[in-house]
Length: 287
Image (cartoon, rainbow, N blue to C red; front, side, top):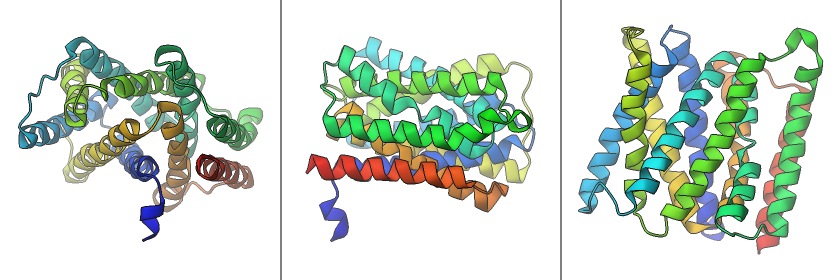
């Protein structure tokens, strides 16, 4: 079969990218119903916490894991990153928000080199360079045109989320050496839920039926993305595995067309082509 020729880390990362793209589309859609960002984070955390708990118990292992300080750190970093990313998604066009936050593989490769002593292979360097070039091509027209300039606060939030995601992924890579993937995933909503509820305060908005369905979809697609990501990080070096996550940009652009009438420009298509080419070079040079 064709999938048998694709490395496991690549398959899991593609699944993760699709899951997170669908999650982002759901977040943007539910934000249109006036649901606060922290309420969206809390709803996602509740669903993820329940699914993760059942998964851990199904395996018959302890939900608390072995390296509790590092697990808590992963949950905290991931929670903060999630909050700022959701803010960016609800205040920026879907494609642009995804593009900005998905600068994180470059951060990941550098952080993995510093903290995990993982050597950055030539294939990964080429892939990241072409991906960043593709992102610059996609972003350049919007940044240069004053009429379509992006809000600086939202851009800063997206970039902060990208750095936080990179830090969280490097921690996941370290934890994968001693912890079960289900336990690692469990700590994310375990920290995010109380933190988001505290920050939500009295701003809770009762969702209608459509918004409630979207909130549930946020949690489900998040779980799909998290599972794919965790398995990919356990199967491959942090820098190389996350290089394939750029495919989420393409998924998000397609979802933007279908659900938000966000038609990609020539520059978006050109940048997407560079990203895909970089991913192919990474896969072929590895072989």
